[in-house]
Length: 115
Length: 111
Image (tube, rainbow over all chains, first blue to last red; front, side):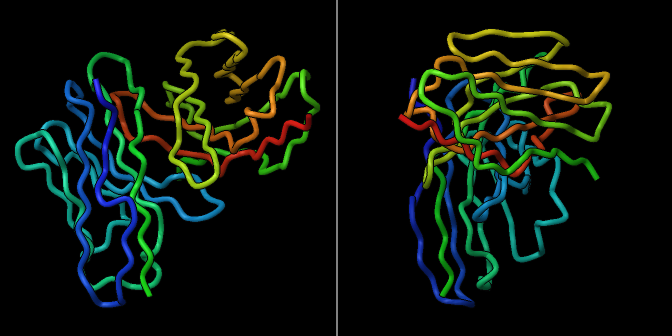
């Protein structure tokens, strides 16, 4: 059983460019979450999916951000027209999502730097 | 606005001592409570989960929950230099909802 994987691990882009990140959850997990973390802060929730359905989006998720999970397996997070304030670690987590167990396991993250 | 508060530290303890980390939360409807460890430049790693009042022990770690006081703590016994990291407290409501994190407490274990 492999853990959550994310790709790429690092991304440097110029302001105004679009970027896309991928997350592959633990195989039997049906919930997938995206968080963002900046230096000195805890992770902040962005959005999450149960299977292919996007159940909730944070108000942090501006119109420039879009996420999808087309077949209920991997997910992508796209940021359009990147801004310097988008520089952060983007974390993906997955959970079994059944019963009362809400243990979420994180991937290694994608560190985005917007120049 | 759901909030989770932690002392940012740094908390310094000598090797072999007990480290005590504390967390308070604002939402009385919270039902699931977690402690994550995060090394510098790495992603959070789940170390403890607790769902009911009282203590839960796992090896050198003990999580304590008091829902009436809206308080969660983590005790690390026989602290080791390898325990030096930031410890994040996270809370969620019913139904496997997203986690709300504190800013973390930086722990330094001095050899």
